[in-house]
Length: 111
Image (tube, rainbow, N blue to C red; front, side, top):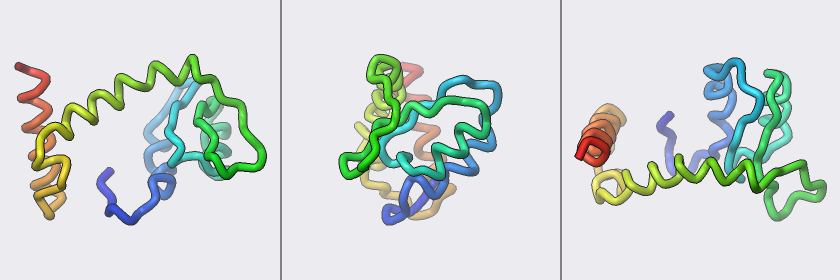
C-alpha cells in the first residue's frame, strides 16, 4: 500500500492483516510495534515477531534468530531503491509510481 511520507506504517496494518490467513508467525519492523497491531495479529491466531521500540517500557517476546529470515524482503526493497526514480519517488501519481516499480522489478529480477 502506498502512503504519504508523513503517515505512520502502523496505520495500514489492519488492511494488510486482513489479507493474511493460516500463518503461525508474522514478522514486522519497529514501525508496527503497537499494542493494537500485536492484538490484531494474535486475534488471527498468529504470533507477532516484532522488535520492540527503544522507548517501550515492557519489552515483548522477540526472536532475533527468526527475524533474520526477514532480511530477504529488506534486500528486495533496497534493490528497488537502487533506481533513483523509485528512491526519490519521482512520480507523484500513485499509478505511475506503481508502474515504475513494476518495470524496475521486472528489469532488475529478470536480468
